Image 1 (cartoon, rainbow, N blue to C red):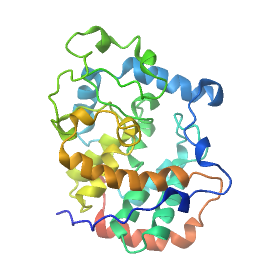
Image 2 (cartoon, rainbow, N blue to C red):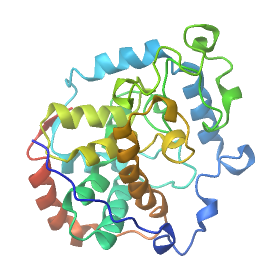
Image 3 (cartoon, rainbow, N blue to C red):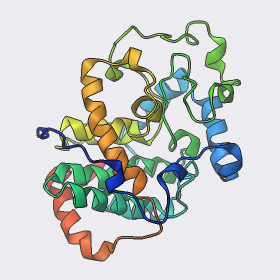
Length: 283
């Protein structure tokens, strides 16, 4: 059973950012400013992420028949993965996990569930180690089954070859959805957010609803950063967005070459993980 989260004490983003990188330089997706790998990943994503594709991948991956491993084993496995969609980092995702968790612990020392959420938030990227192409694992997410918003990375024109845009039922602002239907009733582009959310739910992990929503929507930048898709949101979604935005300050601004001393903090996080996500999980 999930535990309840306390009311959110908001953190001013100016209080936490690495000294070596200015805030305005993060997530700069101007074509001339990012590595080619980033542009190509999003190009494939925006062409191939359709409603049918997302539903098929959800059905396939929620059989949870790929592995049984602990959270800490999964983090170690991510030593072998560099996110091809991220213009801000070129080091393994396992290190970013500890960066994010430690940044949260510094500002929210009593919120253990929040720290664990920071530690595990990208573990859905395990799919890439099991053969899923990175365009279906990493990067910003967006609803499928309706017209993409112009705020999505590289803009609406990047979806020009997506088959759903040629379907009159899927290429309107609402598409297959109804006003304020709630994000829980929206099919998102398939990726690591949705996958890890499903893994945690299936294995009975005890993160509060706020933590689960951070996991599920932290890559939904058009929504939590640009204000898009509000017409699909319920009142609950708007409340949950406060926590997603609080988390984003630590996920984004902790990306720097300065690495935490993983060996020294490992016993602390081993204990927290066993409290919220014990034992081996089905993946």
